[in-house]
Image (cartoon, rainbow, N blue to C red):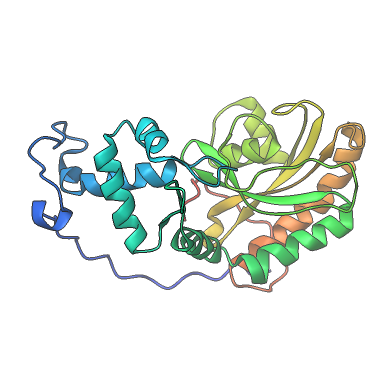
Length: 281
């Protein structure tokens, strides 16, 4: 059996030039970081502050007042207003008629392009829909972002009673089967993670959220680089341990097929050693 195809060698990126105070649009003298770890990023402090403003919006919040943005970002109102107006020029923020601010269409387009890196429409969503039909439960694909995991795409199951997960919400890696699978195949040491690597899947009941059961398996890309984990979830009352064990093989099969699809290969799965790695977009 053939392994997923190797990606072509990419030329090394050219070294970015360091912006000065004029290009950054701020006076750096008062806010330049002094520690070695952040010394090189002092010229882009305006970018950091702009990202703070965008990240101030929580899930489910349609808009925020200038005062609230200022409070959450720990920045003066005039600074936040200047940043918001600049972001609005590129469509990343929009000011409503009542004066409050909301995220603009460019922010959504940026998220869509992020998802496109995983071929969501052509690969992930169809695979999750098939898994949902095969198991009767909701299916999701999780990726690692630093020390948390986020749901990149989700397909709801047909059951009236089901578990709901918010896409994009940061969740712990060490609680719940999707995160533990990501840790295990990122090389996390310990007997529990060795067991997950040996089985190739992991299930949990009520580990992160009471009454919720999940079973997950790893998904890889080219060169067996870990991309994330695929899981099904539902109420523990419908998914006891023996049912999760029975469904684990279906989840593993779906994860394997998804791995080959993301690697651009239609070849049948082959057993190959997995090198410890960390997901990277």
